[in-house]
Image (cartoon, rainbow, N blue to C red; front, side, top):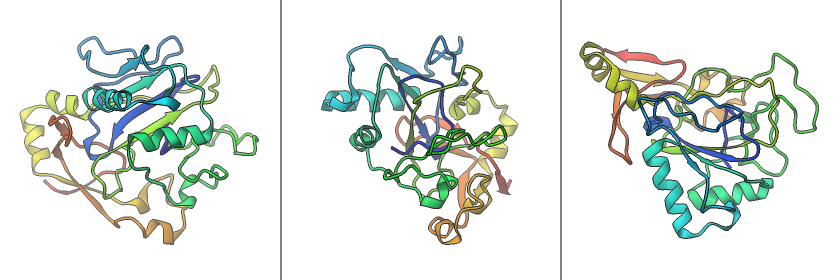
Length: 247
């Protein structure tokens, strides 16, 4: 499973979200204890919770896979309730949705998951069960997963084993909805802008091994306005550590 950075408060469940150049999640959705997706009133397209018909993701049919993919494209975030998976089952589930992207070992923040390199741990406990401390936080800033990747469309899959009652919150932003709400002046400015992202400048990755960082483009360029490759919506590009190249 490629589950980088933010973890959401779901016990136990899976959350899948579209990310990177095509991150077109609908508005902002807070993760609440009493509900997995609280939709913003003026944007009912944000998020889709599968509450019936899909009892066990370890036994997906072709129709199940197509349902998950179609809802992800339409709604940006998909939640599958009442799942209890082993690490191997997480990886097997992800394989059914598409090609798994395995990040270098050093990208795991010195906390790789033993025997499962495809899983990125985003937690305040080390894999040996000891606490990392109050100040340790992975991905605790606004970002778009994989913004340094060459690939223009991917998804993150998040699975939570246990979440504390006093946890923080993961928020999602629909960059396509952002575009719709921008003024004509800002839209014009974005249309003439190109943003650059460098894997060498991402806070959680800057201490990774140089040979691992070198596997990715030194600079990845993103147009200020882009079109979602699956649903065709027009979106603004927003992520962490953006540098404007022109405009």
